[in-house]
Amino acid sequence: MFSRLLLLLLLTSAATPAVLAQSPSATLAAAAPAQYGVAYVTFLGGAGCKLTLQDGVTPNPKLKRYEENGRDKEFADEAAVLNFLAAQGWEVMPYSNEERNRYFLKRRAR
Image (cartoon, rainbow, N blue to C red; front, top):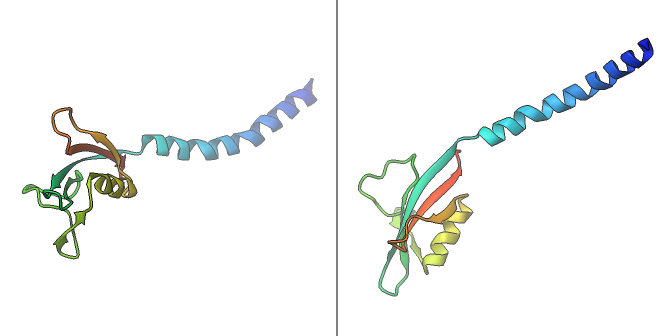
């Protein structure tokens, strides 16, 4: 009887560190705060699109367009804007049924 208890104790104590080592990282990943934003796509009359991004972190009270190298970044079409946002780690969803050029954004906080 004693040997069975000792064996059971050894088996459970050996498994416990492996389980504990996995639990905190899994808990932290599940509890990682989300970052939300809104993207507005502006059409340039057949000449492409521009993006206005409110990422919830960087203030943009005047709704300035997204810039690269000091100039507004231009996209070929709306799909290019959505692909760009996805490459930045955003999950893109329509913001509302009323406007087709506004998107709700969500990603893990950085």
